[in-house]
Length: 149
Image (cartoon, rainbow, N blue to C red; front, side, top):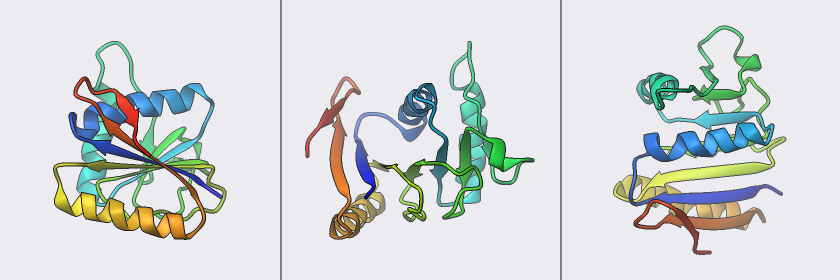
């Protein structure tokens, strides 16, 4: 079964919260995919990950780039990422990707966006019914993560 973590954004934007989680994943040696709902959002996040910090960058690519299978972090619209990721992030209310070979699924959703809240609730119910291990994390006012369930 997959370990699914739900991250409820209440104090920051995805662009601020996602990069540190991706960095931690890479430090652990994990291959990662980030599943998005639109090509426009994929392009915007792609640009952001190169510049989110002045003194470093996050190695990544999109499925449209050359050799997507070699990317440690792959931005994708596909349910089956080309890089063989065992850790899959789902953002912006995108659909849950294929879970074959997945060890960890990270669902990130904006608490100020009603459609993302509804999508997260539905995804929680579906994953719970599938027997997966679920945890729910919510941001505190100082933008740290607090486990709620």
